[in-house]
Image (cartoon, rainbow over all chains, first blue to last red; front, side):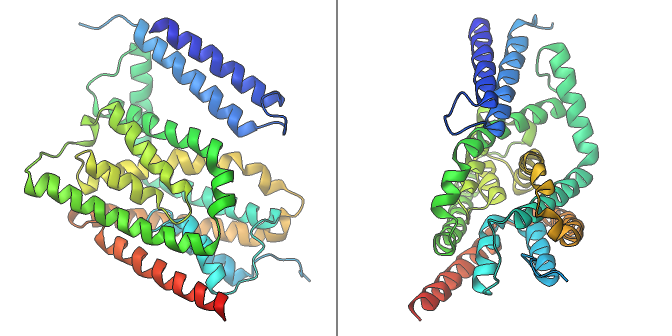
Length: 57
Length: 291
């Protein structure tokens, strides 16, 4: 699951950059789409953090 | 002399009150924003930069009112979120659990919002479909109440506190909120119904819905802030400022009223209002078209 979280985070980050640079859609830059993709990348990193932390007693 | 104004001052103030009230009451703000100008024959250019800047200002006013109303709660939720991140685990503290429920409920509406909003608006943001969706919104709330009664009153199913919801429940409420992309379906109504069906009491379902509204309205308004600086935005500067304040005040009063209302009452009066208003609007619009 940890690997999946990292893979998804990287994938969403790449998607965000592609949206921001206008490479995802031929119609141009999509700032909002990029922000949501970046937020999803951040959430995947949070998921990774929750998976990595050792369980508390 | 201003000849290029997109709304008169009186229209702007009426729209501000309408926004402040209908954003939080489960009666669809977007639906009312489409229907009222159409029914009163207001010559409003809803696609102009100036009008969009005005709408952004109203949303900012509403979002600030919600932040003011739930200010202390947001601070506690923020602290809970940070604590769980540092610990790497969501603990039993209700603030931590509710904070992550808000994240879970916001993700679906954010994703579906950016992907679908413009196409859905293009397809359905016309008075006739909006009137029908308003009726459907009323039907949805009545159905939700009926199912809740069957679940809890007849079958004796126990209620849950908000912080006892699972993350999956939070995502489901978020998905239900996304129905409000259809103009005429209320965001708060859909979220409250979904909360009721996940075993929340009205009071908790409404609180969850209003807390969920804050990031959604804020993000939607913040992303549109550049429109406030559009070349034609200065045309409505006075209306936008006064409208933002009025929308904020009415939104604050609305959320204060509704949090009290849902302690002892349910969604049915709002459901019947939507059914009657939607049917009347549909009849008036069809009659006007035929005439």
